[in-house]
Image (cartoon, rainbow, N blue to C red; front, side):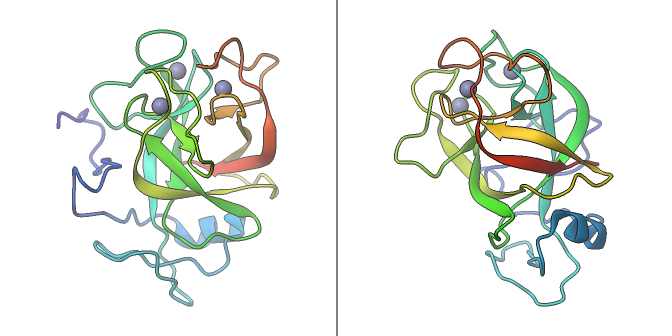
Length: 200
Ligand SMILES: [Zn+2]
Ligand SMILES: [Zn+2]
Ligand SMILES: [Zn+2]
């Protein structure tokens, strides 16, 4: 699928495209502690969301990046970079975020965050509609069910100030004086939890 040479992992977020879901085995103990997820799930190549008591394996996907143009979080694992509300594709900078997926939701971790096949952005799939996609109409979900830690301390190896936009349903970085570019018009708005994203 033409992944950049530096991406030696399997980044495909869509299990229909790559049936062999691949668990990324990361610094599970550390991430578990900092994310406050409690007992995490051991996700095998084909397993669904199954909690394994005492498991030290965290399923997560890297190659999620900040876009300098729209301030959104998008998946950088394909040869193209989706659709940016500021025009053409997204432009990556900063941390390589490593996002947990298909593990149980907790009081400090919210699921139903999904990859959009049209814009490559991360958006919240928990409402009847799916917000506003920069590629037109609503976002379209595929792939993993991402579970985002929120409202916990910001430990080393993570970044807070990632927020939900109630206009487009996207996840974007709220840490600057301005709020990027929203596909629903002008800048993103802010609501809900303060998400704390692990990064490599
Ligand atoms: Zn962008
Ligand atoms: Zn979209
Ligand atoms: Zn927005």
